[in-house]
Length: 253
Image: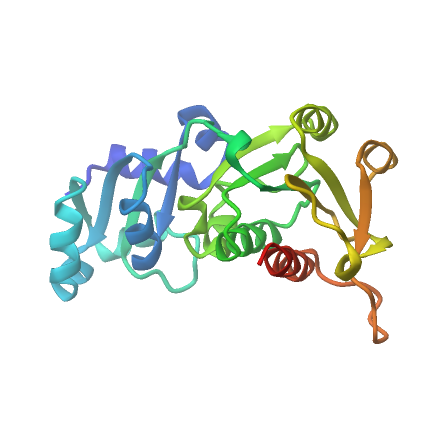
């Protein structure tokens, strides 16, 4: 059984302060644990209730091959859980070292001051779906290891390379020096369906309430938008990312 000391330690990872301090994060739920164990993230421990262990014997055999397992009492689950209906399985992983091999990527995505963890996680999921491997996440964005971000990504966080807390303007200049054409997305811009796709592209999605900053708009090479046909005031940034990435994939054939 997991000791009270370790239970308290691992439950602290629900808070950003301790995730940063310990350079670890916690996930819960069978699917996310499985995604993590199949990835190149380093796992420290898998924690399960006795009930989960007994009713998921095949899955637990899979877990045993990849991690040590500790059990907890059912009444202790809420100390580790960030959900209303916990499944009774958790895993703790080391945060991933930054290792972007961006020079080999044709498309890189950037996030600019997107504060909602659900949107950040969904954009990561969209990137994964459309084959984008590298993501730059600016200062002011929701933390990538926030449990809500991880859940919204549906495990895609384990499939991507990313750099976090970046100074976006500096990265734009850096990528331009390495042959990338940089696009900002905004309500006012060139129709995305008419855009010409260069060999290497950096696509930036911004906070939907505030849009790109003036400095960002002055630094990028072009601004693109999704044309509106109805009466909605705006398009959710995560939804917009799916439309733009779909069009990019289409243009690349």
